Length: 83
Image: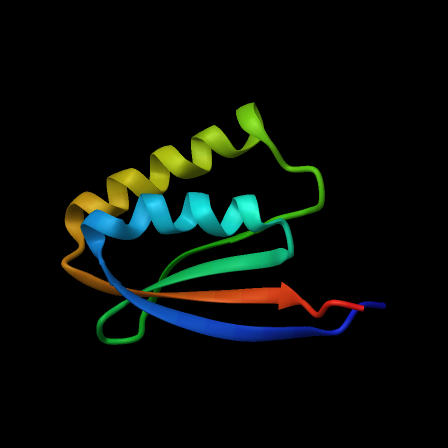
């Protein structure tokens, strides 16, 4: 089983969709969670190897809707460690 680690990014809501797309394209992300500035988890979704296109489109639409409501947020990312 692969080891994983977590990291967080603080961003503005307007940057949220682009950052999530960027993280998905990196390919080693297992899970993305979005928290408001108080730390409350607003959205969380797992990513599996091979998730592309039509499967991720509804997630990005939901993230876009959330971004319109947020000023500042934090993205927590769980990644697989490189072998």
